[in-house]
Image 1 (tube, rainbow, N blue to C red):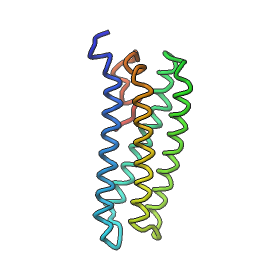
Image 2 (cartoon, rainbow, N blue to C red; image 1 turned 90 degrees about the vertical axis):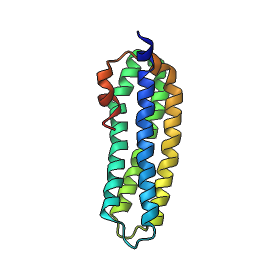
Image 3 (cartoon, rainbow, N blue to C red; image 1 turned 120 degrees about the horizontal axis):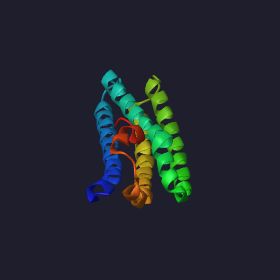
Length: 155
């Protein structure tokens, strides 16, 4: 296996995580700026929905394709994969709650910002654990490069 191929999966996972973190920061920035407005703008709502969709898609792809591929080659990762899957469930619930709050006329920008901060904290901890726990495994993963989108989602 070529050396540049060995690191491809680890770097791809990091790139996906960085893109999601950037999208969250853009949503937080828009919400902070909207904090001075009486009503949340439709563009902000759409941006937040897009972020929620992207993060959810990434995790569904990992659960359906990426984690099974890792487990097939490295069954010893089962405890780590189980924890990561549980964290996906927690993030999914946070995203669902956030989308409900976005749809509620009673949610203030401050409440939405607080929810985004909670998502950010859980997401960053999850990404850090995932990248660290899977680093060696990703360097050894033997899967076609064309599987990236199927395994990581369209992010």
